[in-house]
Image (cartoon, rainbow, N blue to C red):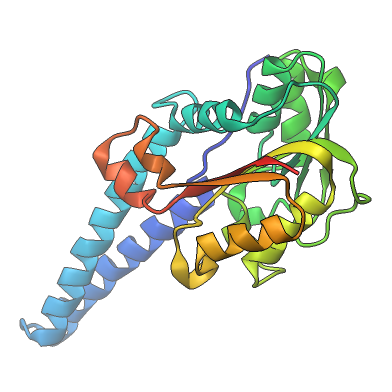
Length: 258
């Protein structure tokens, strides 16, 4: 059985970008045919068409780099995240925003005594789903230790102090049900047992979304998080081509123990 982990740059996203570029070319051609002369609007449409084409080509290139069967960047990102997780692999781990199950499955393979719980909202634009996660876990031989279910990162359907480890990768900034992204971090830590380990990876360098990370780390320490560190600009620590690093600029990781 072959795995299908999909791609962080999803097929629906690529189709939308291609449709925009195609639509601009059509408008440019129609304008030239209708008005039969080159004017400022024609040049504007032509320039927009060119820019849209560049964006499509750039995103296609990045998609190939991220692909598990291509450049393998997302696999390297998952490995890097798990390398930072201060956990012995005993107990149960939660992945917030499991997508196609790739990170949960990688963790199950790394920690053979652990059980994995993945949750995701699975919006249509990402082309992921629960059945896909379960099929991937079966293909990787860890289905007996991996469980996946629908859930909302803003309101996790688990009691306080429930998991031995919590991880998340590039999820919080995409959550539409909670505008305050710091509250998503707190919600993830709520279900973590005292002494449990966490590694949360997101666009923490985006000040418009997250503000001052040093202040947030200090706040979490005051709230009783025993050991927490913030690692900024993690894109510099993960091997990737420069054009993709430009896209990933400003990502960071919160990790430690509760």
